[in-house]
Image 1: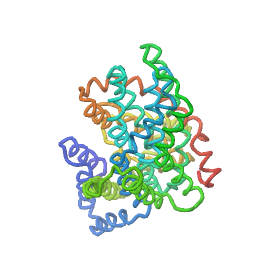
Image 2 (image 1 turned 135 degrees about the horizontal axis):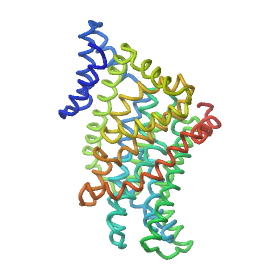
Image 3 (image 1 turned 60 degrees about the vertical axis):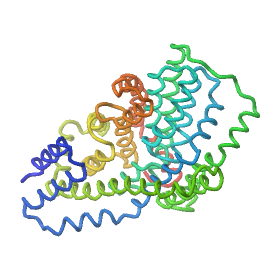
Length: 427
């Protein structure tokens, strides 16, 4: 049985509601059995895929995000961001974006950003008189910054699948993440002027200093993570362990808003989430091995090369394809399936692995705010208690600035590769 048939069988199982990892495992085993391949390759691939040092970062980054949301960190970050930019027209919208940038340096998750910061920000903007459409749209759009600015769980997964430097990916995401923030703040400015949104009074130096001191330990987290990676104090994987324990230290001893009684529930939630991620990694690696046996990446590469031999043209085709996939598939699952297929194509065309990784992650993060499977849209709709369709309609215009950044990093590779090359010597 060819892999083409197996692929459509996998897609049919997904449409029936089967979990993605189960459908991947079933399709992979059918391919092995129908082609009389060695059965022992199944447990071998499953176990070796889980035996990955960089993958250890996943549960600790997830744990850190869960702790940060429970430890009063999000409130302090938002208050500090609002003090900095709240005086601008549509100030709370700008504060939304700045807070997302800061929180991205700790959680690395779009869903954690939308569910953690979003709860606080939506309530604050409603109280200030902002309409729900704009409030939900900027909440959803700004959450996509989380996995681009380091640390980032999707980049850890990409690094494992593509055997690319996770540290290089982290550093490479800094400029695109800041560009996303700038683009979204321009969009906020446009809406604020059009709808005459309010601004707050310009704070005095004392107010700025007080909010900075209140948020100091939280703001220190991204600096410690990046500093530790750049100085070689710890690897990107070890930085996840440091971040998780530092978040625990903040919650229990500095801010004292996290109780020991909360830890079992937090750890259980982290274990459940990580279990799903690990199952996806294991079955996706097995699925990608079956794809390689059937030479699917090679055939896809030959097909794309027949369309154009220009790396830029092929990247634009891949962008359109990933944006389409992101509308229908959860980001982690899409990454697990598509990276093993598309990465060899990018390699054959000489596209830098770090640039390609950030392009993949940004595409799939935009997918989290596009219907019909936009998971961030569902989170925001649930937090705001308004219909999913309304959140979707309001968010669609905010895809434009994000798509503009995607085009920029596609056309200009140095935006993603210059810093990793200068600071770590990797591309």
